[in-house]
Length: 134
Image (cartoon, rainbow, N blue to C red; front, side):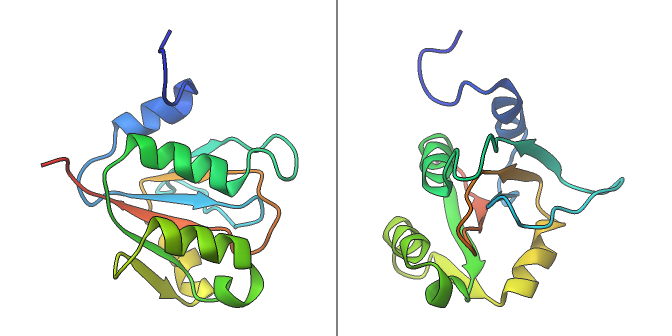
């Protein structure tokens, strides 16, 4: 058994498959996730509303991944001050791009991996673009 880091076997396997420029959507419990043959792999961590939180999952993933950029919905600024503060703190400068929520939902279908949290506050979603450690 692993000593530290992500111990969920399905999430660990999904992360191990990621490469440079692949994207990972970390989403709240309500974001529509595409299904079908070309749909992204999904790791559903949601247990009950609020558990695990968007912040818990996102910070756990950031401890494991090299991220070169992130994209969130512009609407987060008006509807979820906690998520806004978290995202702006984690992704300073120009590494956070804000787009309309409908555009972010469309980008979900092109993600390599979707990680669903139990978060029950609106617009707690971010698309992470993987980088390389060198």
